[in-house]
Image 1 (tube, rainbow, N blue to C red):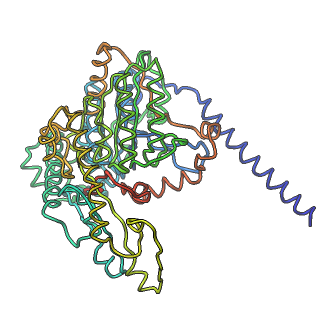
Image 2 (image 1 turned 30 degrees about the vertical axis):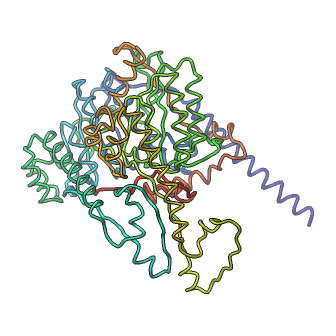
Image 3 (image 1 turned 90 degrees about the vertical axis):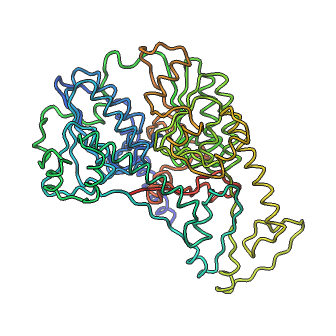
Length: 570
């Protein structure tokens, strides 16, 4: 028996050592990849599929273990800039498919393609199973193609609002919330059976803005009048021939029939190509905060599952202490989260701002806590369709007494202290407990409004009417003085150069914080508090399944600076 156990342990050890060896071999191969040689007259084929994160995810260089990690927004932006100045690249082919990005990122992508077109090189779009998201990007192309039997699913927009109170009542579950701000309607999902007038007001404004943006880009790209585009959208979705007849497409062809067929190079290969004079020596940091905000030790830095206060602070200190960094673009894509964590991050962001020129660039979401951490007093840029503001606070707890009664569970609670039971799930809040919570969140709310007023150089009484938990779109936030300019990464880079006194024409090296990590980097830097590769991959799949729901922030509880809804308009 002892011999068998020894042999089994020896075999398992060999297998494990072999697996580790394979991992290191593939990691070494990835690290040692040579620069891509680009042939003269090449066509860059840019595949845009799934998510386009702000923060680079873990790159696992093992075939079949995971799909290629998606390129980030900034990587795509820089790739197109490089291709525009590369004389070896003669054309660009866009292949968007199954995009799951917000409307601000769509604006960034489309503007990046439009900037590429200024080089005089043609742009072609080839669509597969296109929806409105893919078509939005494609309108920047000179020609748009689709397969003969494909389907153009462009038909306008809708928003679906879900309310769970009826189901929770049947289960005997009650969600109890206190919030400040009449628009801070996140709790309504759990406490009401339909939308409030305030919710309908905001959601209709969002739909109007998104729809107007869609109409305008189609009108611009397809050389039509906006009214004609609205009439067309009322006729969608479209089969191939009707889409052609309506002027929405330029051809129904197969991929091998595209005007460019030779010397094709994809974005992965081209990202490893060198272009003389593209990268400068002056370093600008791109410091990314992506996801919901939670408290954390920072041992895992910025995980690809959200923003931890410790991790974000650690990265900010790294940028502060690096003398070679001449300016910082703080890129935020967050619906908010834990109020204490947000406060900690803002404190360190202000320290960073005292040492380096900083410009804030907002992506799809910079709401509630995501907006709060931008209150350094530095210039703030948003896209017209960025979800921002939501200056409000709420606290929630669950009452499971009804469910416990249904399934026969009974608790006897012994307590010492007047409010010891305030966070118990066995019974409703008393009037005294509710008043206690209300006092606390009003303090947080007033602090939030005060910090916004100070950063935006306004009075409290001017700022508070813009708060109330209301979500604004970027174009509205600009009118209300909550952001300084409408623009994307190009404009953010221009501004940070101005503030750092870097000549506008000078080439820069963009340094990402956190950088994309290979598996070898991950293994060598791992400590006891760093999650396993398996858990990170599982978390990524959960994130893909749940979309933008702030699961981590809600699971940790506490006072929330959190956007009142996760929005996906289709």
